[in-house]
Image: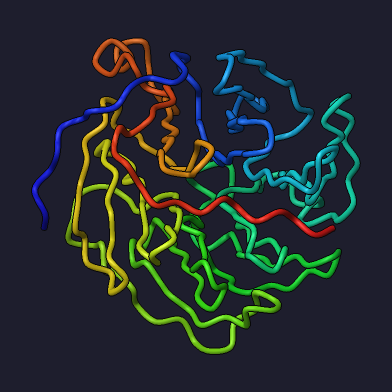
Length: 297
């Protein structure tokens, strides 16, 4: 295991988010977006001006992608919605597990083809084991990719769209699967990319860089891990909060890394010990990022 590097970044948003998740960045507007899942909120931060806006949502949501200059896609506990940016109006266009009130969406990301991968999981621990699934959504067509998933995470794709990555954080074995670059659908069986069972913390959200390496948030230990293309950890960076959740490439050249964190399950005493739980950070290292693909409705 590589040596743990001290935190060298800065705070982008000093707010104790209950469960920061699903960060993404729109280079056209220099805006970062993320969710506070349990609070049913969509957070918006313009990096040029520092202006922060919080949008209330009528549901738990966890994945956002740009469609065009006027619209966004949101994956929620009810399915896929189209959001009008100017008004915040929401339209449910593809119901998925909308008849399962004990379930919600979790990690997800758009494939370079414009298709969406996203996972679902139970809202409570007692219902969680094997309750979720990972879906592929392309222009309204829904394909179930993997079932019996407890906590779907780590979803990202190689820049050429030929490989996909995912993990069940409860199992902590990061998987890689060959994909059809034109559709984002698997063409083979998943294989082990990284076995994380012997390390502390859980494999959480990830992004794949321009060189095919992966940046991953490690839940429970407050770390960001950098994997090479063979799945070996080459760098580890410490962040102040324990519950790091997901990274996203930001900046006009995608050379910076935003990291969301969470204060989920914390008591007032926990927050005294971990006062920056839920804050949003910039890691403070130069990366070779790739902007998230737009969703093709």
